[in-house]
Structures are given as C-alpha cells and as structure tokens.
Length: 88
Image (cartoon, rainbow, N blue to C red; front, side, top):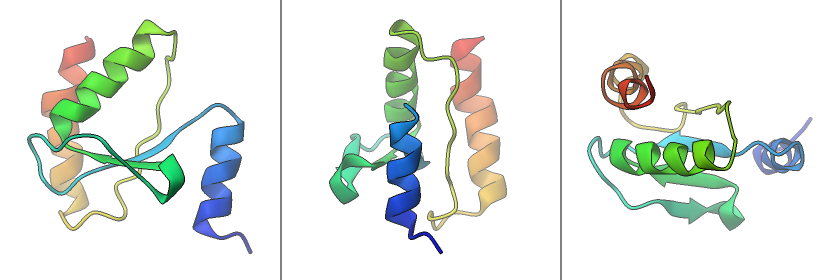
C-alpha cells in the first residue's frame, strides 16, 4: 500500500503536480506543503499558477480537493464559475 507522499512523488516524477484548492475561497498565497509536493492556494493563486503553467506549455492539470474543509460541490462550482472561464 502506498502512502500519500509516495503517490505524490510518483505523480511528480511523471511531470505532473499535486495541488489542492485552499478552504479560503478568494485568495491565499500559494504555499508549498510537504516538501513542495502539495500546494494550497485560493482561486486567484490557482488562476495565476495555471496561467504560468500554460505559458510554459502545460495543458493538463489535476486538482485534488479531498483534503479541504469546504463541501466538494461548492469547490467544484467555484472552479467552474471562477477559474475555468479565465482560460476560455
């Protein structure tokens, strides 16, 4: 059985990043956690990060919201209404 950290390391080795949307909905500076494998941020920080990634050619991202305190439905709605439109 893998630990979360080993799974994240495996993800990073495949040139992906593990991040999760912070419980503070508007803005929370991007803060590396667990050695930089996990990033907590608010929606503005997430938009900024995704813009940086797009600039360097990243075209896919996976978001993990399972560790937040907000209801997943609320977080998904926020991403759909506030984050995704910034990239359309």
